[in-house]
Image 1 (spheres, helix red, strand yellow):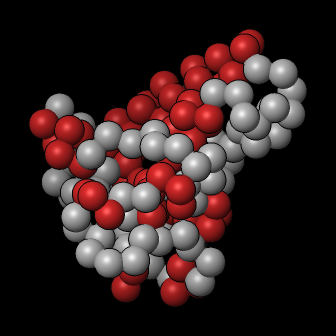
Image 2 (image 1 turned 45 degrees about the vertical axis):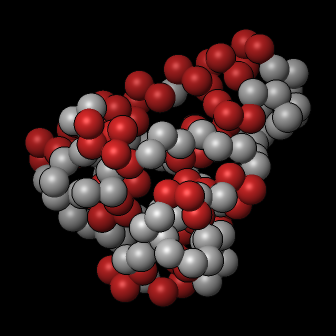
Length: 152
């Protein structure tokens, strides 16, 4: 677990670290914890109540306290969801982290992950070093993709 990644895939955060920091308004993976190690969820910031109801999405649970997510239905409508991972990229990443390999899907998802890095450059260009209040939506979006902008 957590090893043997493709050489060009170097996430800065592990799935449990992402859950502990606060991602996806507390909804993500809250309804399928049994698939993943229990310790991932000991400090996870998860919404109480029905996790299948989008209105229970709580941006205050996100590390940067802002909403940086589109509803899952938008991702589905755009064709970005592979049926093997119906919750999207993060579900793919969790399964990849645990050792599952799907060469075609892994390549597609790693390509998508790389494309998000452009937001790191925008933060470096437009924010003073150490100013975590600068561009919080971009920073939260990066966190959703296992990039850690907290030290920028």
